[in-house]
Amino acid sequence: FTSRCNLRCTYCAVSRPGYVNRDLPQPLFAGIFQELSEIGAQMVQINGHGETTFLKDWVSAAEPFVANFPCKLISNFACPFEEREIALLARLKLIHISSDSTNEDVLRNIRRKVSLDTIVDNIKALQSYTAGHNIVGPDLAFISGISDKNVFDLPGLARLAVHLDIKEVFFWALWKHGDIEGAVNVNALDNLPTQEQERALASIEATLEILRRGGIRY
Image 1 (cartoon, helix red, strand yellow):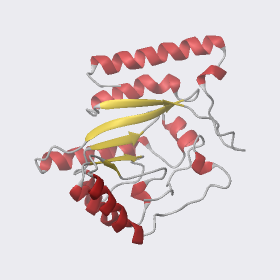
Image 2: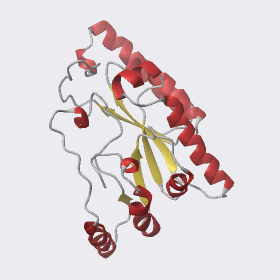
Image 3: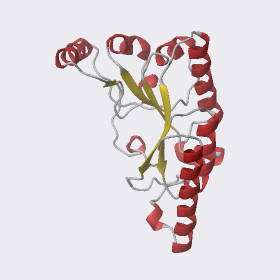
Image 4: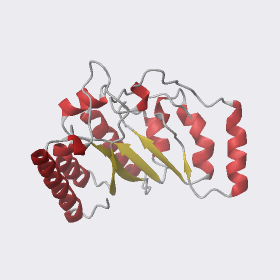
């Protein structure tokens, strides 16, 4: 629906010079919906590179798709959701919540404009809504990029996943776009000194063990 985003993560293309914000033109929605119907789509992901929930009246835009297809979404959950938004999110099949760390300093420096409290509050509001309305609701998953700045915080993220009954944690390796002047930039783990790489590996192994004990897929 949009390539716009409410965050400016230092590792993301959105923060790069020359990045263009675009919204899907409204007249195309009906044609896309018709084509998906004709091919018998089994799952529709209602976002691309941007943050779908940042689009003005995204609920109305998503409604026809959610009403007719199993849908999934990637979202940063960084802005407090209104009840109308929670009600639509509750009808999805899967939500990947972009969350790299439980360390507020890391979040502010790397992801910028995001608070862990807001992410957790949105998750709890969604879970409370589905429980209160006696509906299954979507499976919730964390999607987390691994870099030199957050690798040592990953066990905390795993413990949070267990606490919040997250079903899966999806890890992705950093793709380096280049440094941003004046920002806290991230690097791939192979740029760490050897001793720090060993400590990073131990942190990852501890993270996976917490997830295994908690019965969480990864």
